[in-house]
Length: 445
Image (tube, rainbow, N blue to C red; front, side):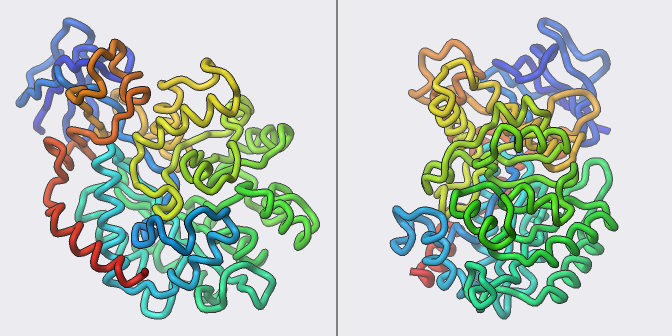
């Protein structure tokens, strides 16, 4: 069992680890205090004196396929509902080859931004793309990144009073059968799992009540998590009140989702009382500051949610509403958006948003083995340098990553293995990926 000492980092986001971190067998086995040395022999030493060491960042909401439609003329400068109705017909043309490239590119971008675990919410399964989640699992394994693959679904189309066109929805029985297949094949409940499955009917305006309830029962039977969009826009509130006679959170409770197995994307339009209910039931919320701003959806009440006891994580959201897959950048956006929302420079700090992107995100995914730099946790780490001009003059290295706008990690480790070295993803030809993905995206113009 090789013991690696990341020695004397410039800074580290952990107490009692100023002298570095010792890693063995994919785990953190020792934190070295300032001026100290490991308690036992080590087999290798990495000089981390140029690096700020963070827990590996965890992205709790994404739509990988949307990398094919960034800054699309059909959707620019629109809010959520018109944005979706413009893009659904374009996304309906997804094919396996283009989808595979979209996944590879999104995961590579995330790794480069210091992300070691990514949750994707894929809900589009046009004819020929029935194996979308299998493709995602294969690509993640190839890159060595942890994933929670949310088997998304839509069975409420325009003809039934929903938002998506008929061509992109599926039959409920087919959805549930495939969900069970994917759980059986990929869902690893063990400590240190690399791949897990969640069940994720897309939203109140694209999934039937029956699908929501049966997905919850299936998740309970197989011990997996539940995920959906909720509380994103006032249009959604109006839809739920008109269709179900209640607000979105009441609907969530009605279908049996109000519990610790669930984490939600966006969570913007919750009242103070609804935040208390979410906290009481330990429902997680993924804060998506960038897409919330791009689509002008509103401000997520992150402080109220956390005060109530709800886990709050961070997500980049889809690359057609972000339009990037960069989690350290999203942390900066969370800081800026949060301070605007609360009109206070003290309401949200740099360390607060980094905690959302690590420990908070881990809690949303129901994982106690990642998200912190502490003994026994998985050795998932993101190492950043402050060599660029933007950091010159910075006195607090950790705050500088957020305030000065870090965009790219120098090294990234997942389960004790380097997956990014000197700013380059291991085993990925970036020029080739860019060319192939760009060619594929051209078919969605």
